[in-house]
Image (tube, rainbow, N blue to C red; front, top):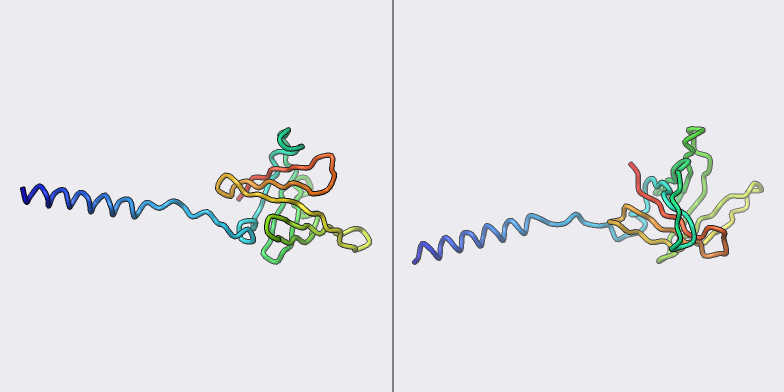
Length: 136
């Protein structure tokens, strides 16, 4: 009887150790860190009516609040703007030809374990929603 209890205790300890070592990968919750990196558009439209979009490049969010677009055809960065995150709103400041920075407001949401990004423009637009996927 004593051996049976010891065996059950040993099994229980093994199971506890096994479950303690199997933690899920931590999903980032700080959007200022989650946004960093390269993103490629995969869909655009007016939510929920979305269409597949062929990427002509990728958008890169840098640590110093710079957002830039890399064009696959020319094989170079073709824009260099600024972004700012505040709660669930992202402000992207696009530079006009005269140097004036124009702020555009987007609602943003990460999903699919932070591998996808949804941007909804907060102004009237022909296409108001874009979905991006994280790329390496």
